[in-house]
Every structure is written in structure tokens, then in C-alpha cells.
Image 1 (cartoon, one colour):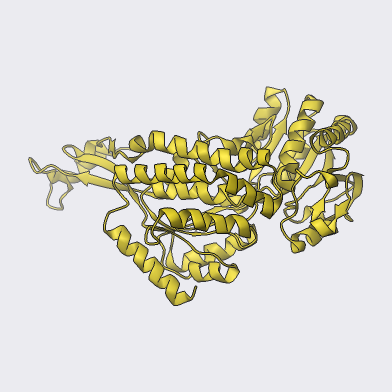
Image 2: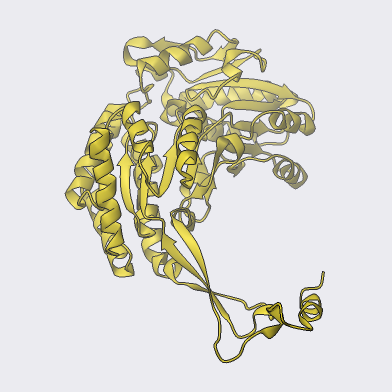
Length: 459
């Protein structure tokens, strides 16, 4: 699609938005229900596409992608009417006689750029929010997950005219051309590096945006944690989707006194979940591309392999791997891993772990395993991160009751549930003044204006 064609597409969407067709509650609800019906009808094809792109099992596809989208849709349909209602605002003493309202309105035309690691969920979840908020949408799925991207295009093109929801496929050059367009909102999920490019493009036109990025998310295992259960939840969080999860534990900070026992339980959990030979497990995920595989394989030289470390280059598969004897200067600790490799570091006092995290960019997620409320409060109160779990991993992303997003280099803005509606909504403040009387003391001619204002607006 040429730049000129994209410009015409955006103009077409802006014109359609200007007709007001996307804004009535009944229409938003109808479109969300139509979307849900289509996604249910295409469920088998979605599972097949995810298998083609990332070798995801049916269980993993449903639990981490399809089921989350169903929950998001149901939650949005249930609450949309209340979210759309204008809210009354209190009247200040200086504004006697007036009435204030806060009115939710759509931004207009939203651009959603989705990633490849959860190519279905991370495309459709923000789409739900954008439609619910009353916007038109241009969706750019990832070229690295071609089967899922093509299927999304097929589904959405069968449901919507392109003036309402359009799918634009292609590589980075297509994303750049889209970023050159005068859209009204940008929602991007991807790497920190590309996120900076997106933000620069948005800044040129002062376009508001949400960035869902990543970073090195820590997992702290304190001395009192129930180690067998902790290991199972750690393995689930790290090796789901072969570690290609933006909120996967990126490195492990374990209390020195329980390190060896935790590693033993982690090895057992890997064998329980993926078998003695994970490379031969048909349900274990693969790395998305040869380039990403080579990058991850190079990290295997950065430390002492505790277990795992075997690869199948012809199938782009890497075993679940734990390694220690790494430092913050080794390559595996210099960037987000985004694969099935987990470096292990030790600490003796919880403050050491807190200091190590706080000396680095704010992570997207943090996980803490402990039974001590004091340790929990110390970590939660001392470390800034997007979101996370106590005594679990990943699960905070799967509830529509919790907004999901990053902070600092891990992103800005949040979505899921009410958060998705809010993200794609501008809240417009309106003050309606009475004509029955006038507030004279505000005028320059008022003799006692300053005295009255000081009394009403005193510190």
C-alpha cells in the first residue's frame, strides 16, 4: 500500500467518523457482539494459525490468547453503557450557579500496531477498546506472524468496511508509512527501541499514544517461599510461548540460602510440563524467526548452564534453560531476553535485590514470592514497575479488573477492561453557567472582588 493510498484510507476513516456513525451506544454494542460472534466461529482457524506461527498448543492458545479476548469482550459489553455516561462534577464555591460535566468522547481514528508474540490477543484486545470507545481503527498486525495476521485480516474484512476498521499488512516500512499519517491516537505494542521511534513520529504531530513495551522484568524468590509451588509458577511464567512474553520473568533474584533447592524444583517442573526432552515436545513453542533464534543462541555462551541449553536450529527451538555465573555486564543481562533462557542471580538481604532492580530502567513486570507481609510491602513500596504478582507470574494480565501497562522505559498508558475504554477516550470537561444571576466580583470593576476571592480561595 502506497503512502498516498494510506492517506486516502485515513481520510476515508476520518470522514466516516465525522458522520457520527460509530458513536451511539447501540452501534458500539452491536459491533462488539458481531466481533465476538465471528471470533467464536473462527476459533479453530485461530488455533491453527497460532500453531503455524509459534507452534502454540491448543491449551496455550486458548489460555493466553483466545480466552483472554473472550473475557475482555464479555466484560466490555457488560459495562459499556455505564462507561459511556457523562459524569457530573462538583461545583466550586467560586462557581455557584454553574453545573459541570465530564463527557467521554472518542479520539477519532486510532492506529493499532500489534506484535508477533501474542499476535491474536495483542491485536484484538486493544481493538475491542477502540471500538467500545467509538473510534474508527487501522490495525497493523505483525509480518512475523503471517498466518495469524492474514486470518485477522480475513475476519475483520468480513465484518467491517475499511472506513470503520481496516487491516493493513506489511513490514516495518508499512508501519513507518502509517506513522506518517495524521491519525488521532496511536497504540503500539513492541520493543523499547521501536517504541522510541513511534513516540518520535507521534511527537511530530502531537498525537497522543499508548506504548506497551517491555524490559528486564525481575522475579524475586525470598527465603521463605514455598519452593516447589514457586518453581512451578516460575516455569509457567518464563517458558510459556518459549519465553517470548513481554512480561515473562527476565531474570531470577533468589535468596542464596534456597538457590540450590529452587533450581532442583525448577528442573523437576520443566520435566513435568515439557517432558525429559522438551525439544521433542510437539506442544513446546518455537522461536519466531531465525534472526531471533541466533540472538538467543548467542546468549547460551554468557554463563554456566544449570540445565537445558540444547537447541534444534532446523526447527528454531531452544530448551528451557537456567544459567548462573552471569553479571550485569554480560550480553544476556544487557537487553530483554525474550526467549527461554533464565539467568539466576543471588542475594542475601532483600534490600540488595531492591537496589539491583532500582539501579536499572523500570521494568514492565515484577514478581515476588514470599509469605512475609513485611517483605511484600517493602518490595511493592520501594520498586516502580508496570504491574505484577505476589506468589505468581503472568496472571495479572489475564483479568479485565486490573489495568495493564508499563512505566518509564517499559511503556506509558494502560489498557484492559475499563482501562481500554479510557485509553481510547478523551474526557471532555464542560461547564454550563447560569443566566439567572451573574458573579460580579470576578470583573475588573468590582470594588470588593479581591477581598471576596481571597476569602473563597484561601490557602
